[in-house]
Image 1: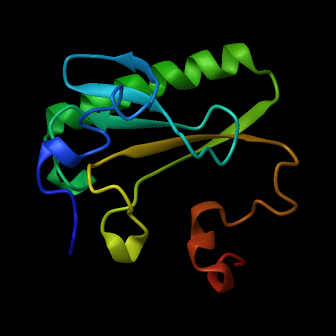
Image 2: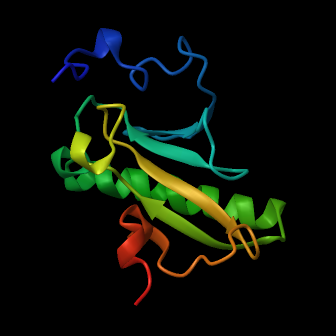
Length: 132
């Protein structure tokens, strides 16, 4: 594994230096604009402390991340009347698709018609399991 083991080489530990826009923050967490958004408004909640996955977070950090996600959801709904849903998720480990090894939670706004068939949502990581 060649995961970032120190904060010095971690994108999310140094968002400004890595040209990642900080949208909001609190004592324990940051809300970052996703540089490769899958939909307009896609953002990431990240802890200030460098930990690898969601499961390494403290309960206090999870609460801080959730506060930022809820605030951003409210702001996005106020800004864009076309938003009709959200996907919220995390990738924990390389086999789950994690590519930046600093815990982060995606908030992805969804709009009616942005996919032909959104049924299955996050289940589509296994496309053959999305229809049920």
